[in-house]
Image (cartoon, rainbow, N blue to C red; front, top):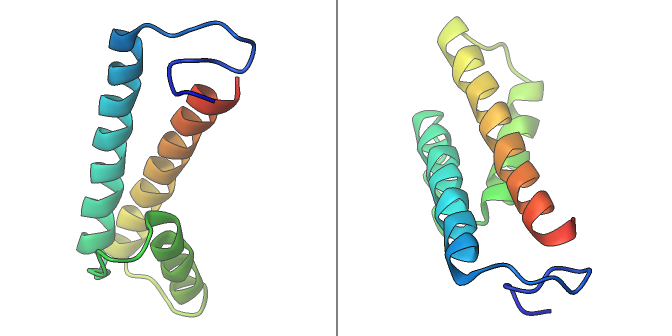
Length: 91
């Protein structure tokens, strides 16, 4: 399926497709920034894998208030990114 073609056969305009890409990049950048602030600097690993690794790490340790706040922001940022991608590709 071509990016500018939706599953039901309707097409997105080139501008609409670029807007989705731009929005996804911005959300991915937010996730990257939060991961870095939490100590994960492994830029070669996929964001989803880095998030899962961070989640496993935090399940087994006591979080400071600052770390808990950042992790909460990260969780919401990952959700926003996943929601955007799901909506763009699977609606």
